[in-house]
Length: 503
Image 1 (spheres, rainbow, N blue to C red):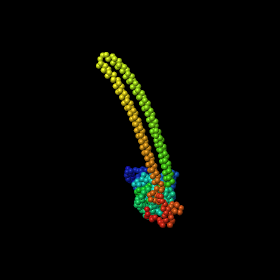
Image 2 (cartoon, helix red, strand yellow; image 1 turned 135 degrees about the horizontal axis):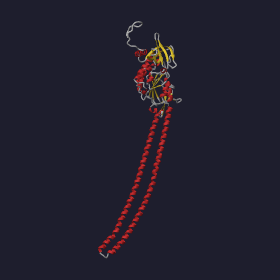
Image 3 (cartoon, rainbow, N blue to C red; image 1 turned 90 degrees about the vertical axis):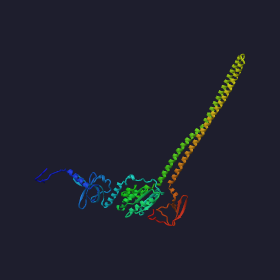
Image 4 (cartoon, one colour; image 1 turned 30 degrees about the vertical axis):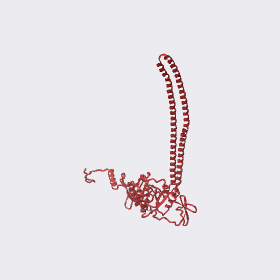
């Protein structure tokens, strides 16, 4: 389209944009030129808080200003509340507010401007470790429930050491505390702590937990605990690490890298060192449950054994009843045999009479027939003799069969008795072994089991109280060292503080 004359210049219009399209293009250009998070330092002015909880303000310096909005959802995570005239370091994204065509910063975090450089370095290290997955909650290791040796990395200056030792000693004196003195403030402090984690901790045998402790302080005082190399040393430590640095409001990179973060060194002692009274109560509870279990099993075994014993004792009565049944059967067999013999005798008599009659009948006919008849007369007696022998053999076999049955019952009774005795012996042996194992484990869990490993407990000879850091012995004072089975008198020649580099 061509235009000429009036207020219009002569030119060709190729594209017509709406205000929304132009604004959207400007927004894409601005956001593309400044991608990601920005860190802007300036002074707050025109601070206003809406009824919805959002805060609107302007960031300005000597020659320019920019609008900013701090939404309510982001303010919940911040402890710093800005005021009019404060110099702050704002972290956010640059966006374009289309209804007004104004660009602004959507703030995600606010910090006082004085610690801006520390804050930026803190966020850089934190983001780097998070991208590597080193701060994930899944990497956190649980603390051992019953540690025997604990390493405390801290400075000997201040009350941290004594507070920790006092609380740990009041909870459980059998836990061994190894103190590794380091600098926790100023130049070289981070290197001292890194050297303790990388070189001194691996040389401590049978170590269970490592505690990194320091009292509260300013951001500059706590800055060595934000070292990236220190965080990697904590992550590579072979033992669980507890961070007790500063106060609850102070968060350092060491806190994020540790397996557990607590507010104070005193809380670290309460978290790590188990209370001896709780251990004793748990052991007593386990012993009671074990005793109840043994009683129940013993009662069940006794009842079962009594049932088996009653069954064994009933066998003689059963055998007696079987013997009586055999006697009755023997009497019945004898009476039957007698009846058979009487029947055979009667039959023999009848046959003899018939033979006699036949002899008289055939006597007149021929002698040969008579001789035959005579031979036939002998036959019943021979038959009677054979049947009598068979009856005697049957009686003998019957007696042998019953004797074999009785012997079999006696053998089975002896075998059952032996098996029952063997089973009872094995059960009792197993119970005794379990009792010995539990007694041995209980003995190892007592505080005095450390004495069997070469340690000794020192007492003041005057009032027989323990030698503790709060009450050290005096020169020429007499001490008593208790070892298993003996008490040894000692005289104090010197009292010296352990060297700073000592492990």
